[in-house]
Length: 123
Image (cartoon, rainbow, N blue to C red):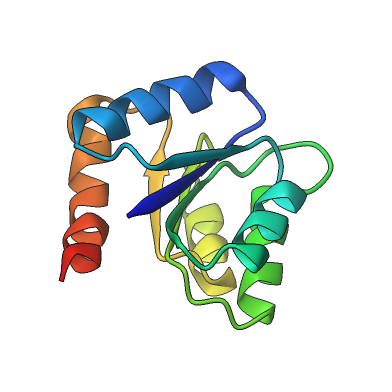
C-alpha cells in the first residue's frame, strides 16, 4: 500500500516515514502542505492512506481533508497533529478524517493507529 505523508516539517515527515518503514511500508510519498496532498490524492488512485498534519502553510490539513472528501475521495486520512483538544479531534472527524494521532508519538503509538488501515489494505 502506498502511504502519503503530509507535513510542512521535513524532519517530521522523515520521522513518520521511518516509523512506517519499521512497519514494513516502503511505498511512501511526501507532501509539504494540504494543496500538494489534494493534487497527489486526486491524481494518483494508488494512495491507500494519508497521514496529514493540521497546521501547514498554503492549505491546512483540515482544509485539505474537507476538499478531499468534497471530491468524493474515500482514501483513509489520519490526522497527525499537536492539536489535542477534544473540539479539534471532533472537528477533524466531522470533516472526514478517519482517525487521529497526537504528536509527539512513539513507534508503538503510530503502529497501533495504523495497523487497522494496513490490515484493511492487505485484504
